[in-house]
Image (tube, rainbow, N blue to C red; front, side, top):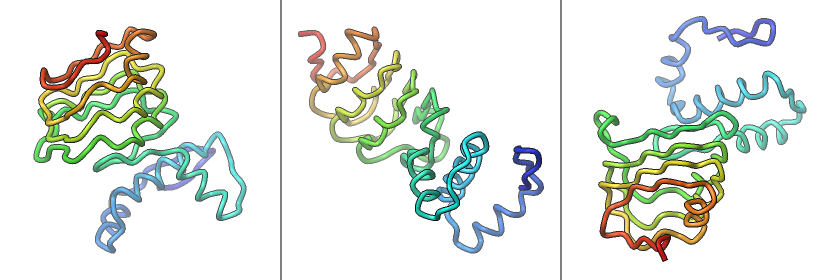
Length: 166
């Protein structure tokens, strides 16, 4: 990777392979790359604390990847398309920080627990598929508000309690 006229130029894939062999996780490489890209037009202070805060505040890490808060509009992590792995565990509340999302597909995974109320922060969301998982409970009121105000279409399993119809 090199920096020319405010653009990142990819020189060789050998850099990432060397860093991975040295134990640098892909997650952190992704954070670093997203930070560099997002700072190209928004220079920050050279203070190390400011750089760290800016990097952390510009990305959200969910499961195996990190996503830019500013540019991520779709999250298509359908288990059918995941290849060799499926998402497990609960849906992280941090998903609510991806405020530009319009489309979420987390269907056909092995997710458990309840739908986090933080999804209610996603005021641009128009589609969310959570079916074919092991989610429990009811749809949070904060998400039901999106159904009413944004015409959000939700696909869930029949075992979940749809409180948005009340």
